[in-house]
Length: 325
Image (cartoon, rainbow, N blue to C red; front, side):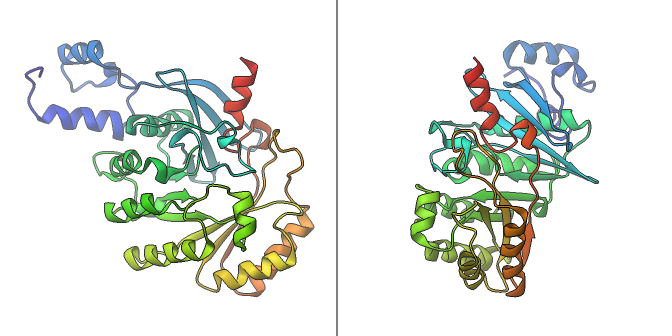
């Protein structure tokens, strides 16, 4: 519309996505007249960082304000040479996990593709260098916003964009079948993690009231379908809650469910203010639970808690910001 040659599109795409340019002024190979014209029509970013909270353990959480005044969270998790960004896909969440602050007030709306991508750039700004890994584990159920997410992840993987390997991207889902089918058809080959949290259907229904396909058998089928399509095993995520899903019987049932070819992430629960009776088990119980899985040959990663002092669990900072006005 501005009468510019088509190669300007690639220049702008590279500046915005690969280099994370926050505005047009830094785009030195783009004519100033075009930079001015574009700045008058659309900002490079439609979002801004409202609050930033660094943790004593190096984790940092950002509260990102959207153009309509709503806000979402994203987290920077540095560990050695790794700089992992955790991003959101919805304002709120409709799944209703009892241990998660994201869905405390339900889902408000889906994020646009640009709003998903801009979280990555805000985190890159915070880190001072590009992220090395990406996890889609923030606010929202990613597969309830699968079209915008797929478009965003294509740009993340594009060599002219962020050029991420699929092996450095993990998508976490409660397992909605329709969104899963769309993801399968997309051809994206990211790492997939399914939020399990219980080895029995009745308990999972209590913990994840509107979670995915409904039954654990259906989640198992989903994991098999993903492996057959991509050649990659699915990881089951298991938030460990004291006195709820952390017994030896739970561990043995989970071991039977997973076998030797299903990875499990065991995650001690982050405390949330709206559920004061729910907490992580004592370290001894957590270690005993993990020991049963290891003895059964289950591939296991015991995740340590990060960022408790900055409310790093999904949705906590947004709730605190809303309550403080």
